[in-house]
Image (cartoon, rainbow, N blue to C red; front, side):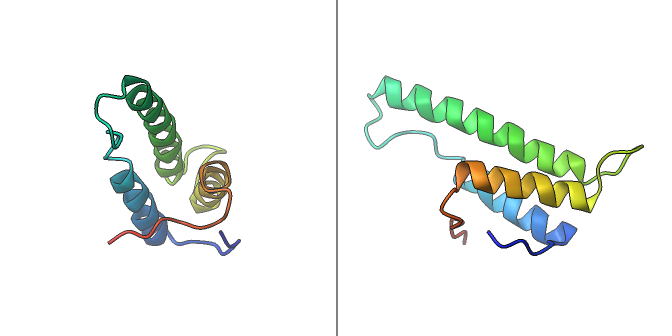
Length: 90
């Protein structure tokens, strides 16, 4: 992901797209309970990190704001999309 500063609307659109892609946690083989549990844990972790991005958009005393949200989003992308390629969302 580029180091470009994203606006609040751009961040919200990207977070919304990420959340949409996380909606499907069922593996290709629905009987694979281990894969389902792994997907559920991964999704829970990622949703928590995305929630931190959104909550940091609201500035409070000595914390938050759009710069903080951009930093958290870059951290999220580095952890969960290390190749720098975002998923395409329709």
